[in-house]
Amino acid sequence: YNEYKSYLRMNAGQENDEIIEPLINNDSIPSTNIEDNTTRIHRKCGKYRYVIAFLMSTGFGLDYILRINMSFALEGGLVQKNCTGYYCWSEELQGKVLSSFLWGYWVTQLPGSLLCCYFGANTLLGAGLTLATLATLLCPIAAQTNPWLLIVLRMFIGMGQGVTYPVSTFIITKWAPLSEITTFVSLSTGGQYIGTILANIASGYLCNTDIMGGWPSVFYIYSIIGCCWSVGWFVFVTESPRTSRWVSEAERQYLSQSTHPGIPLKVAEIPWRKIFTNVPTISTIVANLLNGYGYYMILNDLPKYLYDVLEYDIKSSGLVAAIPYLSIYLGYIFSATFSDYVLKKGIVTRTTIRKICGIGAFFLPAVLLMILSFLHNKIMILVLMNIAMFFNGFANSCVFVNFMDHSPDLSGITSGIGNALCAIMGLIGPLIVGALLNNVDENNHKILHQKWKIAFIIASAVWVTGAIQFVIFGSGKIQKDLQLQRDKNDRSIDTRYVN
Image (cartoon, rainbow, N blue to C red; front, top):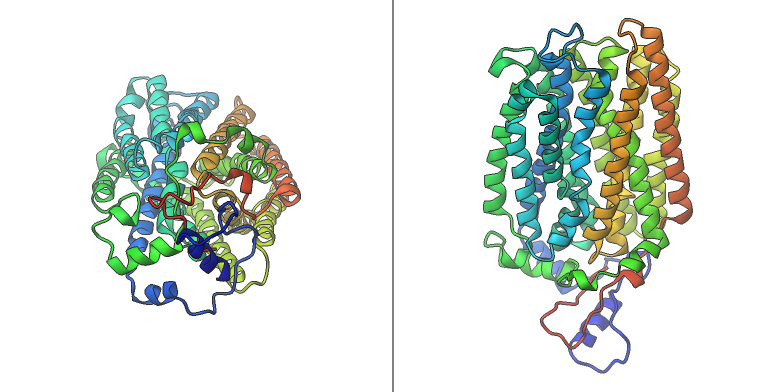
């Protein structure tokens, strides 16, 4: 609090020879028991920022719905086990169809962040999901024409969605008070799990009906929903509270005093060498990369595992496959709420809570995944998988928000690098599963179980590696060498920075 007051005095023109730097120079949060003007404004202001969080959350939900609908189409009639579907596609080709999304996804991660220097982050996020929606609409026609045309469309879907995570950090840092940032991030991005849950439940049902031809309905219906979301996004969302006509003046004032002010980002000023030599940031990027392997493997191939090994039909497997995402969502919200609580109370440092969440997100799921790979009991497998996914939900509170811990100004760039590499690793997962299952007799459940055991053990080893390196090298402290230079004489830039 005292640092904040001193900082305002410096910007008011009082003498001070020190270079102005962000106030978060450690990983603790000062006491919030002191009544100040920001607190009083907070009591009076509205909550329009949570409308932004809701629209972002539904956008991320749509994002994941459009990712996984292909898994259900493949199992629900597009390609049938006895080759009576439109195509008798091999396991290897199906793996390419599933992973092609990631071929496009990683391409636009970093470019999406750089484009924020020229276009608004809200415009890029809305345009990206609109492109993904329109490409999804064409998928049934492509599937019935040529699988490689479908692969190209899936790449376009990935390219459209590739900008969502990196550009969302620019929006979040302008709309989320720093004392609520972990919770706000979880509310804004947690829709990915709700979307996955709804898609798992609805897709299995739609594929078993005659609505719009069965499996094509998972493309048509979700595309219609996507178009409706796009209209709402462009009407109600702006990049910052300053340009929004919907936010109250009290809330606008509160957010101007309690959020990271930001500096106009210029490509020429991005410190690339410092980014790639900063150990904590590289550790977070590696953690994100290694988490992607197991996460995307389960995201893309869980319906196949339930169908092939546990012998659930496509309708039942959709319902069962939704449960792990409810678990991961609960872990997502719990870890965020817990993290913000212990930081506000000063119980632990930011670095400590990030590492605790890292152990929960990587090490515990790895152990549980390895145990369940040796089991044959359906109930025990599903119980352990759901517990593993609950803990994997902690990844948000140690990885994604950690990019903003290190450098709010560059969080879009660093998260873009991390997600691009994560997508590459996520691309490898389905390809490895497809290679393991290729030419395996679908009726030989013993061999199928052995192949899936190998897949789960590989994922466990990757997650353990992620946990170890993050605990050793990770940090929740702001990285001073990644902060953009602030000119204390430039009154056009709001340099207030509340810890």
